[in-house]
Amino acid sequence: MEIKPTYFGTMLSLATVAFGLIAAGAWNKFISDLIAIFLKPGSGVLAELIYAVIVSIIAILVVQHLGKLAERDSGPKP
Image (cartoon, rainbow, N blue to C red):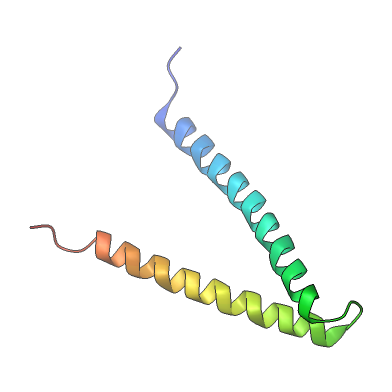
């Protein structure tokens, strides 16, 4: 039985996204637990704001780094 390349590519993409979501959930739990060490539980809106800012900064840094890696890999080949 032959598997069409389109089908295989779609399944590969879906599996990659699924594992990415699992990893994101794990990082989310880790970061929220780490922040809870420094902020007392029940800090409310301030704690959520700090968490959102930290996660946003991390996301920006990771995306910038991945962009630089992609740029370097797609550059001219000798």
